[in-house]
Image (cartoon, rainbow, N blue to C red; front, top):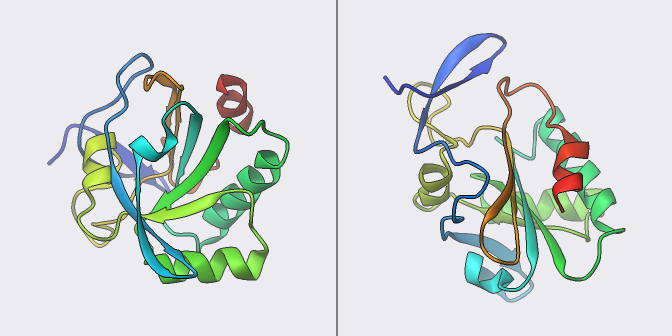
Length: 171
């Protein structure tokens, strides 16, 4: 069993990957999103020179994840152009696009780690075992324009919302 855990209603759930800390170099990633022309890759390099807020959720189709995604979409409207907000989950890109379209979310991107969960492993948020395996644990990462982590929050209870104010303050 993994030494790192998160919890769901108090029950420990093992996580795979390292625990990242403020000041660490942000690991590269390769995610996928749905666009009008099909599936497109999303990588850290595409945000070079920008500050990036990664809002990681288990599934956009659950209540707390939907709230988190909607709140960051609302906040993204007031952020400068050199800040990007991306919601990451293992939901299929089609499901993410359906959710964002139905909710009118246009200020952030959704990107999927469904292919190989390499983002989850690199950022230490992959639920490693059990019925929730291949799902990402709720967390927030703010990556500065220099590629270093400025804010890291591993939400200890999956059913809880993150600290929005701390994440936004790190931007």
